Image 1 (cartoon, rainbow, N blue to C red):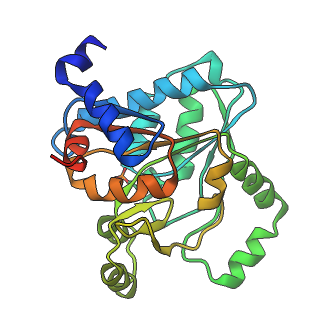
Image 2 (cartoon, rainbow, N blue to C red):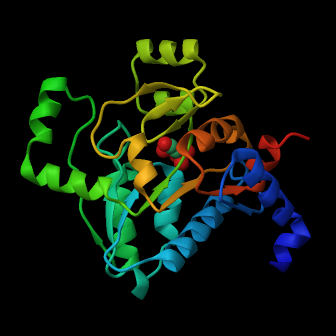
Length: 254
Ligand code: G3H
């Protein structure tokens, strides 16, 4: 707390929580666009929260991305997470394996001493193939677990950066630009006013399912993501945000 006050971060946290209509905001010093260790500090903060709010036999659904990978990296063995099952929030969204929610879920379980269940659903499925897959009993079982998650942890991406990283079609890129998409989370793309302008067809958690979770933990930082965070946070609905000083200062009006 002393360090935080020194940097004036407590005040930033309060202002940001009000501005984005969130229950709780944690701001770590620095800007993750500038240095990688800031992303790890956000990861450490999430790991600490997960330990402190854990309940027996809970399900934790996690999304993908480099920020979530930093969360996984910072997890440590914890008796409070031994009975936790980590699951991916959604099936494949076109990310590289290292950044897939499946990979992150298994790493978080391995590091914390918890359990995991995976969703083996490729991205770019035809409607027909997806309908068939959804009927598989094992997939159904995992989807049910995912949708029952007590805690959801996810990142936020810049819409264009995410669409390009996932090798989206030129048509989709044009659509997102035309609709003014600025932010992305779970494969949903948002305009500045929080309107959903597109979502990748996968299976697993839907945006509506978030309302059923006790804790939605958003982790995203870097001044470049300011507009993305400002668009997605209110749309996702009011939980906890872990961010950095770079993003916080860029989001707040002067
Ligand atoms: O959905 C959000 C993205 O996965 C965020 O990715 O943490 O690599 O910026 P990132």
